Image (tube, rainbow, N blue to C red; front, top):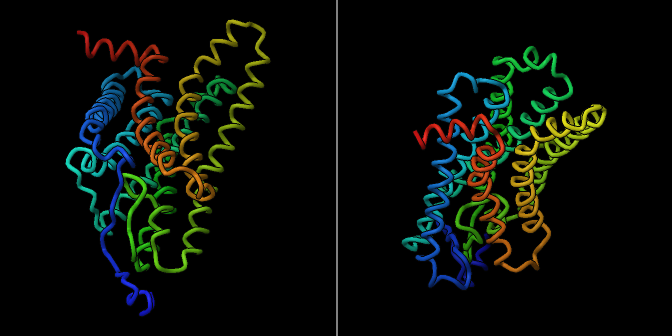
Length: 313
């Protein structure tokens, strides 16, 4: 930052200001009530899924092991944003230090890209189950599933690890107000009083190499699945095979649609209303952890039966 900017009244700050819903600040305390229920339902739902899969030996199969990974990832995402979101809406605390902000965005992005990897792994599971049913047990062994999980986690951590350090080297000045109730890399970097070209390029590279590649591979998997299903003579068997994919397709749409939409708005939609960014941000981080346990409990008989047994017996 130059001496001229200091003379004009700007100062370097080590604190960011998070935002709630613009124009509805007087309603934040009331909005915090449904937000509390959403977080409670998300945490309870994902913990229930993990508990049921862990304690029920019949569910120790690839499909459910990947589902437990998805539930753990969603649980982590909920816990990452809970302190700042409820802090703003319930007691009006907007300040967040740089270090806390960088730590939060690291975990948010890391878990988001981990979820993308898990959804790709689940698509591979459905591909093997439908297209290579005789080799399902020999291909997706517990060892292979463990390696897939570790590789997914390693990829996410390796790609996101540089981001906090790339942001920390910048000076930040002026009005350091973020658009959301939590920190995101694409938002924080725009507040820097420096050239952010490297961060922008690296951020785009991370998006393409994770969400971009994963979504294309998921589409490719379902193209192969659809080809196999259409070759089945029996209509009942075709519907049965496709029905095993419905929950996963819903989870994919819930995750990728708001994530891609939010990324496009942040990078290219500068004229988009601020309220649209805020709503897309909440949908992106709150709805997948809330809806995934509901979808899998409703659409998967084994999970539904165990949930009913846990809460009704």
